Amino acid sequence: MEPIRWVENKMPKSEDGRLSIMAVEQVEKARAFHRSFPQYSVTPLARLDGMARYLGLGGLYVKDESYRFGLNAFKVLGGSFAMARYIAGEMGRDVGEMTYDYLTSEAFRREFGQATFFTATDGNHGRGVAWAANKLGQRAVVHMPKGSSRTRFENIAKEGAQVTIEEVNYDECVRMAAAEAAQTPHGVIVQDTAWPGYEEIPAWIMEGYGTMAAECAQQLRECEVNRPTHVFVQAGVGSLAGAVVGYFTNLYPNDPPKFVVMEASAADCLYRGALAADGEPRIVTGDLQTIMAGLACGEPNTLSWDILRNHVSAFLSCPDWVSAKGMRMLGVPVKGDPVVISGESGAVGMGVLDAIMCDDTYKDLREKLELDRFSQVLMFSTEGNTDPMKFRRVIWDGEYPTTTSPQRAY
Image (cartoon, rainbow, N blue to C red; front, side):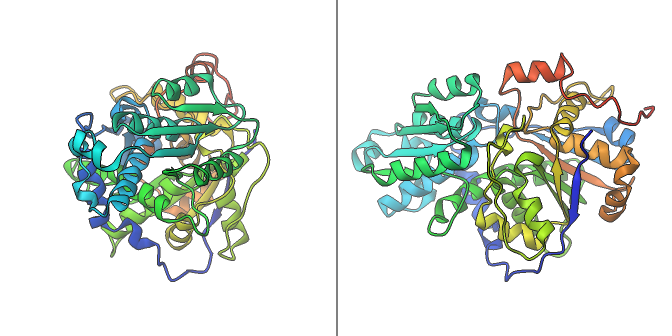
């Protein structure tokens, strides 16, 4: 069985100029926007006390994004807020005026009209952009990479977007969407990856993701946890990871948690950058085939990379069995713990924690991260069951087994 690969972050620090993107006051603007939606509610923070005891941890908390806006994933937080910021900028207004009620009003339609929002996606981000465009009376065009799930395609199409599955990988779909947006009147690309010359909208998307992190911080306090000691967060291009790491670093400037970033081994561009240890990002090319479709991105977000290189303790490259194990553990938890229905890109943290705490292959990593019975660990289940056939093959049929893993009694 292919092992999890890991590297301690020994990269040189930058001037950390991107950390301010995730300033607490900036995230509060995004949270106020999301609260204005009638569909908004705070998603659950599952407290897995039984699992924490089993793993030898002080506490384990999982943010369950399967409840977000009825869309089964967190991604809508970023796309919707970026749309609001873009519209506010076009109108010369403050984003604080861009409430759901205003954006759906006749007055807004007369003043602004319609824009066309282009994006590339494996499913969740595109569905979020399509949903927000639909709710706000805007247009959406969505391109998906080859091998994309038909169910995810149909969920985007149901929101009224123009959607295609292309014969290229995710990063090529991004370039396709950007080129089409540039040729379309009132067209704009809403993508959570950044590159030179395209950084403003990705920064807004990251701020939108901050709503989830801010909810977590409040929910942890309600559980009498003043701060998590460790935060595990998965990465594709790294926008979510940069948002989470940036927000919690700003929230706890004097005593930040230890941050661990996890990627699919087929698309581990951040891990490779950390392995090179020179501070420069790396790119992974090819088909990027992994069950963790939401993490199948080979080119890092340059904004997030700057945050991650300064604040992450370790980067992990994870084979598909890690995610499958996490899906099964969350879906059939220790007795007394709540069930978390977590999809392939959402469950990798659970599989990673199990390996680190239960398999002495990773003893050095466990000791390096100082994970023990006093640790209060936070992770994010970023999607629910968004690909039902794949979910069933993993949970029911035992796809990607881990029978060689060591067994422990509860």
